[in-house]
Each structure stands twice: as C-alpha cells, then as structure tokens.
Image (cartoon, rainbow, N blue to C red; front, side, top):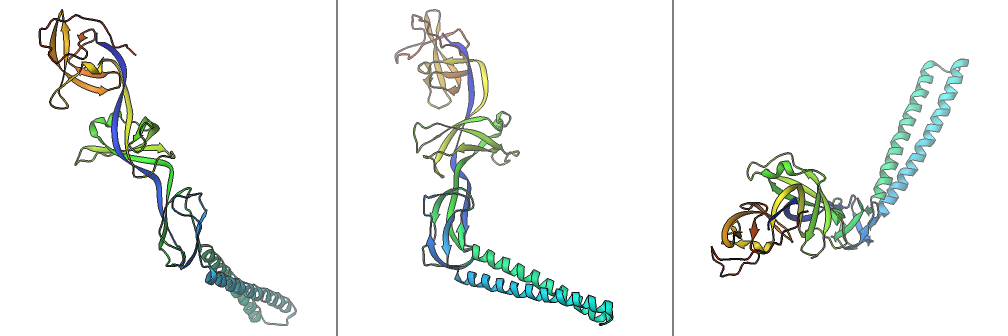
Length: 325
C-alpha cells in the first residue's frame, strides 16, 4: 500500500573542487637562488621561508645605508650645537640675526638629511629581507618552479601555494531553484577519487544575478579540508533545499522504467486485478522513490512485477506499506 511520508528535498550539483586560496609566489627582488627549504607537497605556515636568494649585495647596501645614517645623525648633532651657540651669541650681541638664521637653516637641512638617510636604511633593510621568499598563507606547496643556482629576476614565479583548509565548489543552478537556495544550507559532498567518503559542506555564497544566456545562477559551496581531498577533483553535492510533507513514496522495485529517463509506470492493484498507470517521478532515495503525480496515498502497487504481467490480470494483494517518517 502506498503511504505518505515526509522527505527532504535535495538538489544535486556537480563541479570541480578548488582550493579557496591559490597564489603564485614570486621573487620580490632579483638574485641567485641559493637554497630551497620547501618542496612540492610540503605543508607551510604563513610567513615560513620557502627559499633564499643570495643577499650579499642587499646586505652591503643595508650596511652602507646605516653608515650614511650615522653620518647624517652626526651632522645633525653638530648643527644643533651650532644653532644653540648662535642663540647664545645673539643674546650677547656676538653675531647678527642673519647668522642666527643661517644656523637654524643648517639645522633643518641636517634634520632632513637624517630623515632621508633613515628612509634609505629602511628601504635597504626591506630589500635584504625580501631575499627570503615566504609563504603568503598557511597551506601546502603545490609546485616548485625553479632550482637552486638559477639567476632569478624580480617578479619571477618560484612556487605555487594553495590553502587546502577550505575547498570551494562552484556550480550553475537553474533559475527555477533560486528561491530554494539559502546561504548556510547544509550540503553533502562526495568525490569520485574517494568512494564512500561523505563530507559535510555548506552553501557559502549565492550569486544575486541570473545569467540571461543559460538562465542559471552560480552557487559557491564551501567544503572543509580533508587529507584525501586535492584541488581539481570532480565532486557531487546534494543541497538540502526543503522538506516535503505527505509525499507519495513507493518502493524502488515498483517502478517500471520507460524508453526515456522521464517516462515511468507502476502496476496498480484495483480490486483483484492489476492495471498499468503512468506516473511522474521526483527524488529517488535508497529506500523509495517520490511519485509527484499519478498515485495517491492508500493505493496498492505491485512490487517487482513479473515480465508477463498484463492489464486485468488477477492479483492477490499483500499490504507492505512504506513506513511514514
């Protein structure tokens, strides 16, 4: 006997899993690559040193800038002493006001020289620090693009780093399902590369725009990282979009498939005889198939009908209802 039950409505989406963040790490300065500290597949934390360039020239430039800063500071100290001396001599009439102004100008020039030397020393220190190539975020090295001993130009790519703590699946969804899609909705994700593995994800973003060309919109699903997941694998996602109450559900064995995927029939027991009836199917589950139209709760159907069953054939009804949930 056909029974009504509550079922969760789901929408199946497919797409490719991609890391949430992926960056190509390049050399910020030029130089010879002298050491590789991380290689393909290695895990890294944000700020970890991936590789080291020869920093000799940058170290010497930094030392020269520091020396120039010391000279500028000494000039400023001398200018301060001269300016103070000029102030004292002006009070006693030992110099003119013009000489005092000249001493003040010399002090300002010396202070500007210190500021410039300090900035140049900071730039030199930064350049020296950039000889160490660092990870931009926590993740894994997906590719190393240069070998030790290679002369590297500024901007040359050295590594590809991915953040595999969160993956994203982007999928196009028909516009008819827009109202059913909710940010935060739970998602069950399965990947072909790991049969049997079910991962809980969630809808992270829903595009506010429907593409006029294909009448679909983009949904981004976040999937937490897992040791067996890598970027680029094909994934299937089942998104919970609602709950249908009192749905008509029949055992999978009661469905007789037609020539096309949309065509389906069931054998209905009317009195003591069997009759074939076309039905429209909805969601298919492991223990039952949702019949959208063509059947009503309380009707009896034939499970696993024999191939020779004909309309009007006598049948003996045995109640085996699908339990309501």
